[in-house]
Length: 126
Image 1: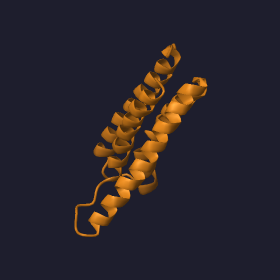
Image 2: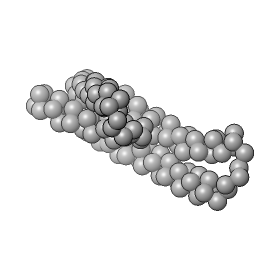
Image 3: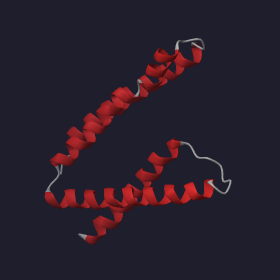
């Protein structure tokens, strides 16, 4: 299956995200006295092209055939359930004094479990 359109859409979205992210971080670091609502909006500005990343992924999922959608669904279900299980488990450990983790840990965890889920689901349907 050709993924050229997907890679183009995803690549351009990620490029825009990276550009806005670098720009917003640079601007925030140079403007220490910026008013709160503007500072917050600038900090969230990378999420605009981030929404394009989500759009590209959802468009690609809509292009998949039935079997590929099933594989993706099973992988995403595993990632969702695994992330919930692991994050809740660690939450209990935080109650015992373990260090608090940033929310930025969740996406790499979910992405890693999604990849593992894709491997496992793909093997099932070979």
